[in-house]
Image (cartoon, rainbow, N blue to C red):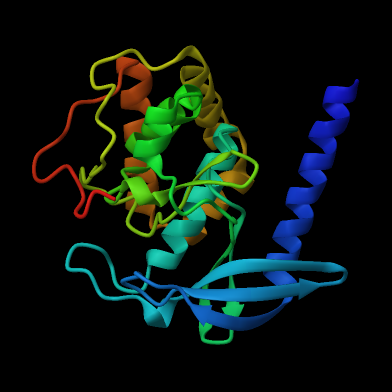
Length: 250
């Protein structure tokens, strides 16, 4: 019974965080260093909840030749939706809302150890399950920018994945530092999560509708194609054409 109770309180706290991110009063505290797009550290206050969040306004997005203009913030939110639907909980709570610089994405800030990233967690050990889930997740969402530094270790030791602004392209774009598992079978729990996600897409109109507000129809169709392919092959796919490691790797 204890377990379900803690699960309920987790659900409650995530729901509260999402409400606060969506409705709380935002004040920009600082610009985040080393970001190619406007990335602002923001405090959010809602009722008795005080949070730090990362705010990326649409108007601060640098245009990319291969992604539709002004869509990166929505892709970040879609990555959160997919991670939650899979039950992986890798992406911090993320919403789309209006902020001090207009519409953008607002994501819970993860207080983390800045010396730690994906490579150090691989070396440290203890993250095998999460890293395999992350690798499968990146294949599914077609992540074009999985750098090692886009994985954080929270103060509680948890692995978090951030920076999903260039995911969900209709063409194969997977660029990642994590090619360790190519050709290996997807873990059973990943296959089960993918099968459940496909069922949710078929049977839960709310999920499909949310994805359609964040991505265009061709991108949702491409997501389904990748999902079906991963379920059919049951393996981590090999690199596609073109550059398949992001630069810089960290």
